[in-house]
Amino acid sequence: MGFFERLKAAASSEWRAYTEHPFTNALADGSLPEAAFRHYLVQDYLFLIEFARAYALAVYKSPSLADMREAAAGLSAILDVEMDLHIKLCDGWGLSADDLERAPPAVEMLAYTRYVLDAGMRGDLLSLKVALAPCVIGYAEIAGRLAAHPNALLATNPYRVWIGEYAGAPYQEVAAKAQAHLEALADRYATPAREAELIAVFREATRLEADFWEMGWRVGKR
Image 1 (cartoon, helix red, strand yellow):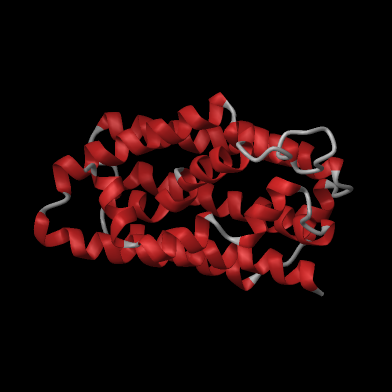
Image 2 (cartoon, rainbow, N blue to C red):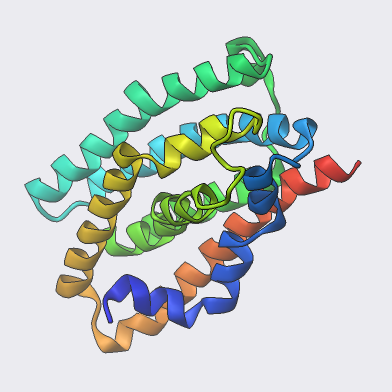
């Protein structure tokens, strides 16, 4: 069993609560209230900004030039590609770039991103990548599961673009590379004595990711 699979096994209840949250299931069948998705989109834009900071921190925390290049590539992907795609997606939902910039950050968004940055500041590159893993790798797993739903990619599902973006080959490759890099870091730095500490980081990061879904889910219930 690889390092990432061990993390998931140790945090199995948190991982299920995150990857199988009702918010995600409602994306697959198209039943998610639009207000919930719009709120999520706005907060996810702010989330990407903070994740860019995390990748900038990863450059600083990198022990080798190869690690620095991997982190720099991730930072560029967020700033130069993913944020533009997100703005285009938001525009399709009636959310302008000004709307995104003016939006106040939600507590749930701040909680996870601050936790990731704190894990990176206190620890090394491996600690930071473990904290990032629920998002970077988890979204690929979630989208792959959702795409298998019979209604997920139908033209009648308003969330098919989001599902298709994360289930598609480009993002799946990003997640696979992130997992491979995590495994390589773990081979170098994850001693048996340290693994319990890293599991605790992963478990908390996963819990905070589930809270991010819950944030949108509550909006949809209003």
